[in-house]
Image 1: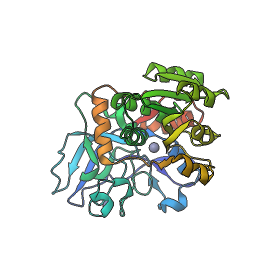
Image 2: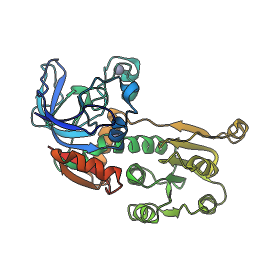
Image 3: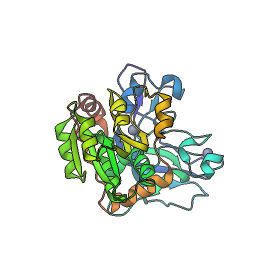
Amino acid sequence: MKAVQVVGYDSPLEMTDVPAPEVTGPYDVLVRIGGAGVCRTDLHILEGQWKEKSGVTLPYTIGHENAGWVHAVGSAVTNVAEGDKVIVHPLITCGLCRACRFGDDVHCEQSRFPGIDTAGGYAEYLKTSARSVVKIDDSLVPADVAALADAGLTAYHAAAKAARRLRPGDKCVVIGAGGLGHIGIQVLKAITAAELIVVDRNPDAVKLAVSIGADHGVTGDGSQVSQVLDLTGGHGAETVIDFVGEGGATRDGIAMLRRAGDYHVVGYGENIDVPTIDIISTEINLIGNLVGSYNDLCELMVLAAQGRVKLHTARYRLEEFQTALDDLDAGRIRGRAILVP
Ligand SMILES: [Zn+2]
Ligand SMILES: [Zn+2]
C-alpha cells in the first residue's frame, strides 16, 4: 500500500510502497483510511522535536488523526465489524492498567501512539485495536471528522471537564478561537448554560467565535483584561480555558479569573508565574489537560452527529501531502487539512 513516511529529521516526508498491516493479534482492528488530519505536531515531528520522546525507528508512517472504515478484525473483536464507519482514538491502550480501568486512556501505562511511535494513518490502512475504534453515525463522513480524533478531542476534554463545574449563568472565558478554541466554544455552547466570553487577538477569529455561539467577543488589543472584568461585574470569570498558553496569555488569563476559579491550561509554551500567596489567598485552581479519553471521543461524536460541532476542512489527496504540510506551515488553511487516500 501507499504510505507517507518520515525518513529523516529535517528532511521531507516520502511516499513509498510498504506492506499493508495485517491482523496478528485477537484484538487487532485494521482501518481503511477515509481521512487523516494534518496536524502541527506532524511539523514538529519533522523538526525532530519528538525524536527522543517517541524513540521511534525510522522510517515510519506518520498521521495520528484518523477515521475510515473497518477493513478486518482479530478473532476476539466483537464491538466492530468489517465495513463499520469509525473514528480512531489516537492511543492504543492496554485496558488492564489502573488508568485504563478508570477510563483514563491517556494515562495508560502501556500505550502506543500510531503516527508518533508506531505506524500511523498517512496511508491506505492503519492497524489499531478494538479498544480504540469508535463507531460513528451514518450521517458522518470520515474525512470530515478525522481531525476531531486529536484536535477536537483535546478541546472536548478540556471543555467537558470545565463544564462539570460550570453552573448556568457562570462566566467562562475562552482564550484563543483558533482550531481548538472554535471546537471548544461549540462544545461549551452545547453542554453548558454558562455565559461565554471569547478573547482572541485576531478580530476575524472573534467574529467567527460570536457566529458560532460566543455570547461576547473580546479583541485582545491590550485592554482585554479590563474588558473581561467589565463583563463579569468586576469579579472575573468562574472559569478560564486557555487554548494559547504563550505570548502573555497566562498572565492575562489569571487576571481574568474569579476567586476560587478554575484555570484550564490547554495550549502551552510559556511558564505560569503566579505567587503562591495569591494561589492560596484566592483559592484558584490550575488544571492541565491532555488529549482526551475514549469516552470523551464517543461524546464528541454524538455532538458531531447532532450537528452541534462542525469543523471546517480542506481536503488533499494523499499524494499531495507536501502541499498540505506547506499550506499548514504557511498559515493558509482555514480549519484543518485532511489527506484522503
Ligand atoms: Zn494532532
Ligand atoms: Zn492501560
